[in-house]
Image (cartoon, rainbow, N blue to C red; front, side, top):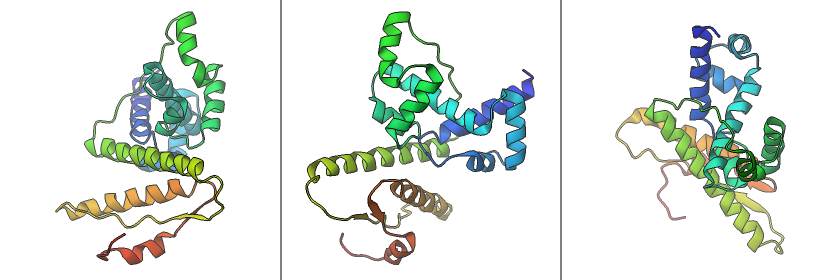
Length: 216
C-alpha cells in the first residue's frame, strides 16, 4: 500500500473513531469531516482499501466492538450503543457476518482458540472531538437505559410516550461554543426520533423555551 493511501486511511479511521457512537455518522458526514466531496472520498477510499466508505465505517465500528468485548467490561447491548448501533439485533447480525460468530461468544472464542487479533484504529488527537463523542455516547446510554426501565415498569399501562429536548445552555464565556451546544441538542433529537413508539416534540416547539426561566 502506498504511503499516501495509508495516511488517508489513518485519517478516515480517526474521524470514524471520533464519532463512533453516533449512528447518524455516515458517508456524507465523513466527507464533511475530511473536507472532501462525497465522490472524491468514495473514490480514494475504494482505491486505498478496496472497500466502499460504508463498508469501511462498519468495519471500524465492529473492530472497536471486538476490542470492547475482549475487555469484558460491557455486555452486548452496551457495546452496540457505544459503537453506534441503536438496534442490538442489527449489531449482532453485522458482527456475525464480520467474524462468523455472534458477539456473545467472543469470550468463548478466546478461551477455545486464544485471543483474536484485533486491528486497532488511531484515536483522534483533538480534544473537542473526544468531548463530543463522549457526551453523545453518555447521552445515548442514559436515554436508552431510561426507556428500557420505563418499558419494564409501565408495560401494563397504555399511554402515549412523548419527550421534549429543551434547548441546551452555553455556560462558557466563549460564544463560539454555541454551535457545539446546538449540535449536541440536534444529535440527541435525532437519536430519540429512532426510538419506537416515542413521540419527540419538534425542535421548533422546544426553541420557544430558550432563555425562559421556569421550573420543569
